[in-house]
Image 1 (tube, rainbow, N blue to C red):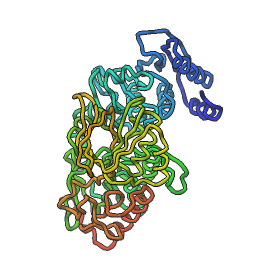
Image 2 (image 1 turned 90 degrees about the vertical axis):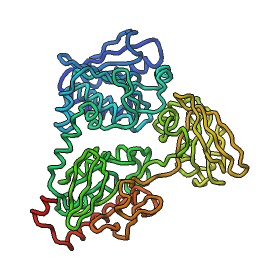
Image 3 (image 1 turned 45 degrees about the vertical axis):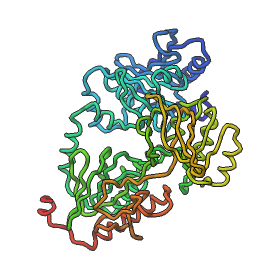
Image 4 (image 1 turned 60 degrees about the horizontal axis):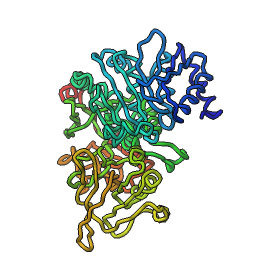
Length: 526
């Protein structure tokens, strides 16, 4: 299961273990248990601090295994075989249970250790989900740091009966003490903030005490990261406030067109962007959502959702975009109950079932091709009278025996039984006839919507909501610049966003050089 190259890398990591690790495996007679034991046996061979005990304990999920260290009260378990995207989660769990310090801010570690009450988490993941590891790793770390926190990470593909009974239709899905806690990607800061109800007020108070910036970047995607780096390199006071660092890149699977990087995946690129930003003197404020931009002659202000206000002589808006929704009855009710937006993450949950993909561009056709390898049948629904995807993708789609394409079809409603999707209705735009399609899942792939609603009435926007910028990235408000997918710049690509972020930052610096700084007293009064 572990090839020689992977064993070599893993052995180097496990040399960082400083205390014994006890693995207790719960198995049955199935092939998955045997496969899991092969993996665990390989770990024991690589590190003399790891011991393995096998139990036929039917009180636990089988196959599964717990990680603990003698003298420590750790409740951490993997149910299934954590390979694929979750192999990193396994390695980090081994290191942390083995006493290697986590790369997490001390303030967050202190918050985790102070959490009170019994907190039992269950996380359902799929091995192809690039968002799941962040949640699994966050809750694993919490279980290592606080004995009152228990966590089991469950591979939904190995335990389909649980997925069915709990109607898990998107991953990651997290339960706390038997009740639904959340779905989708969550940072450790976000999880802790939800458990520590006073953290938002403390964070707002802390942010309100910040001195004014010379450049304040709103958004932490590729454009925002580039803007922050270019500003910090000028030696000026720089801050970056992001709702989630990495932005939409976190939801991207394979990236093969970022020049000089032959292949990477979204979460890896997002981590590299953040690591690069942290090499400079940049004040990073993650999990902060901007709600209002307040223009001013000498000082601009950005009001955050938690009540804090940040001030800066210039602002760079790089808030990116999100998946566009269909806007039809039933979509909101059945989101994460059969309506999904990430085929890579949620596709495995629909194995052997019938699904639809909405949208005939590259994203939609690629999603249909990927899903066809997992589900029993895919129906691609396109509003236009032709597909807009590249010809090579169209040929591949039409070659697949379990796919259909409906053109000139307008989705009108998502149908369900109250708990999960059962189908949809669509209208043939030429004949005017309405049809019903029986389905288990619907994957929406109809383009992007800029995250600019909070800017309406402040900066000039197009009817589509994009920020109007000139060739320097300047908006309609002096001192306010914008970059990336939220702007009118054509071709929404990562490499273009990076360049536009750098350009906007250079333009902001030029603006600062051409305008006089306000007096210190006026800055404090702003």
